[in-house]
Length: 75
Image (tube, rainbow, N blue to C red; front, side):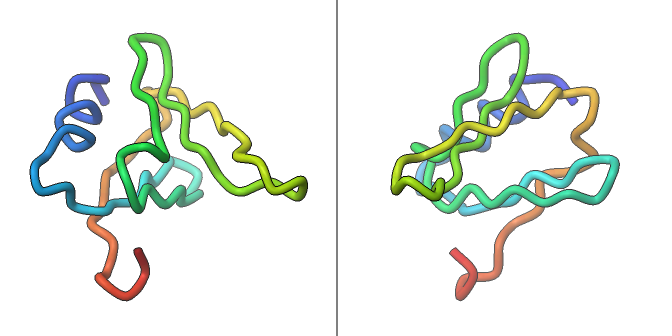
């Protein structure tokens, strides 16, 4: 997947929460645009860590199979 596709999802107005689905089936929720950063090299999804801070998870664009909308109650 090209990074501009992810960037477009992050810039939607109003924002629509989505999840990143990888080729391995791993799912990363993006309930708000501040929970992800799309760079030209990789996507970084931020998840709550054990220390209360946000931990980045690096996802290669080659490993993204789809961007699926989140159900309203899952965001």
